[in-house]
Image (cartoon, rainbow, N blue to C red; front, side, top):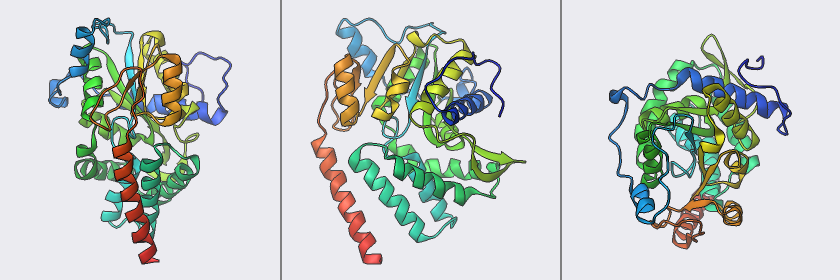
Length: 322
């Protein structure tokens, strides 16, 4: 893929594959972005208690209404939605007999690890990526998009964090665009963004020829530095001022993306991100315990205990079937 004409050349610390992945994600996002001015595309807006709380505390109003050079970028897994989108998509494909039980077991173990550790392990992500690419190879993009709509209703709709959804809605209500930024396939991410009434999504771009998946990626998964490249590229294309933008994530892997914007938020943060956010005085929200925090880390012992129990059960089930 040739470099996009609207991206200003510069020195980059990211790898060439990260840059390629980011540019491909930005290009795909602009092609598929939603017309959020059409009310028929937007679900009913949830209550947004965060904004009211900020005003009551005397904090400056944020987001700033009418600031069209600002936008918001939300990580997906464990930030907007509980768990990993790729795992839920895999469950739906298994139900439709795209692959066998042993592959579902591997997906389940990856998901259990992700939820217990609260971090995105590169080795597990690589395995999940390779599995997903082999599964979709030879299938039409339109087929997977249609199935993805069904899978969202079956496995994802009830896993959206209401608090994070309210934060996104506050940006929309202020007249700003809101984008998901995720390592999940861009098609899956676009479906989720549309269902939530968001502007669009930056996601991992799988190569397709004549509408059929080849089993290869464009660049690499949209993860870590690649997310930052995607946000930077999209901001350049949209004429955004990153100092006026906001970004939200749960993972220390997204520190490059969070560091790009003037308003970084740590949402349900892992240990490393919580420590980093506290050191830099970033705002923090933790919805795992039903409590909210500003610039303070909240342990989620009860949630971790429950997840640990689920992990033990998953491992026991796996051992019984071996």
